[in-house]
Length: 234
Image (tube, rainbow, N blue to C red; front, side, top):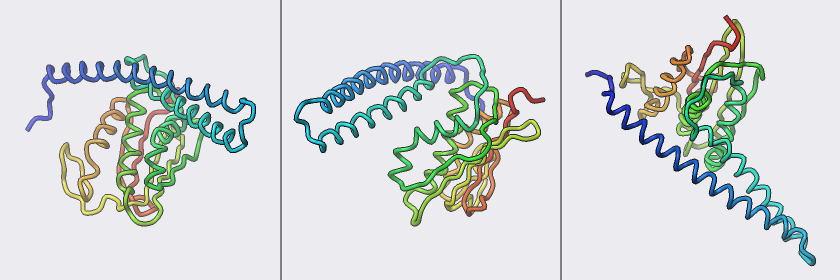
């Protein structure tokens, strides 16, 4: 069976995505306006005469939450913009922003996640698909760990050597156990969790001249490695 998608389907999908992106951009703008109003009133509340210290602390908490939420929404606008010319992006910055997007979900699932390694691992590409690929990899690890006993951990290591910039994502989940052959020639793990998200990430990374590989993590779970040409390298 052919995996070729008819051109009219691509056009329909592109139109749908453009419409959703436009709506999302409007929603982000409106929510940001609301957050500014909430944050402004919280700041005014802290300066009101006769306000108790408890009220001031609570108003400070409101201000902090609104500022963090506004920052996160501003970062999400990368997905609402039309495609741009490729630029240079630091893999560590991309990984840290992706974890910030998933901060709430990771916190609810009690999963510890951290980024370490080289700060200078630049790659050339368009911001939106690169972020989507990294998010897909993180979501795959998050899904593997959610609901499992014990502390879930996601470790992201950034490195650059020999003209390649790499992002290695390890989790301590069940790993790619009981493999069987799945769609598009991929080996899928138990519960079919290594599915479309990682396949899409592999396609994105491949278009950027890189590779996405799967393996067993030293932590006992799954290891996903994104390897891309270092920007400015050979």
